[in-house]
Image 1 (cartoon, rainbow, N blue to C red):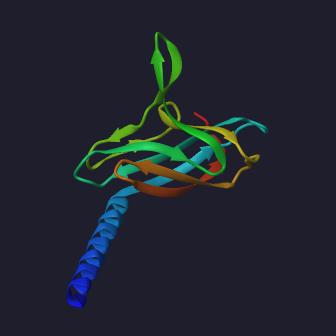
Image 2 (image 1 turned 90 degrees about the horizontal axis):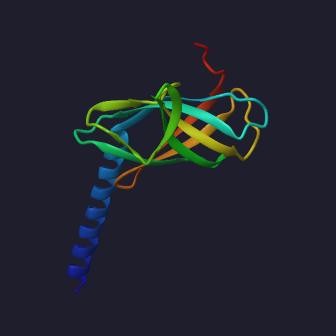
Length: 150
């Protein structure tokens, strides 16, 4: 009986290590760079966030949500010109094709960051948590910066 218990425990341990290494591999295959938040007037209730997500996988991935302890809500938006009118269209997740990237930048995809819990100032560092399909979570720090002029 002890022999079988040891075999079961070893099998469970090996299975746990395998699942953790798979999760680690999945997280490493998604890289996030150039994360920043555009400054806004004092007492603003909305900010725009930008970043680049690189999918190094051989399969498409889906970004489900973005959250931050410093904001009440964060939505994924896409700016589009429709009938000569600029509109922001809320995205319900975002697919990123295999071995490609999604660029969040002014005038295109962006994070609409709603109701900050504290007043933001230049150089503040904001923690963002990106939740992808298959329970993959990636955290990144975004810095509040001056909005780029065109």
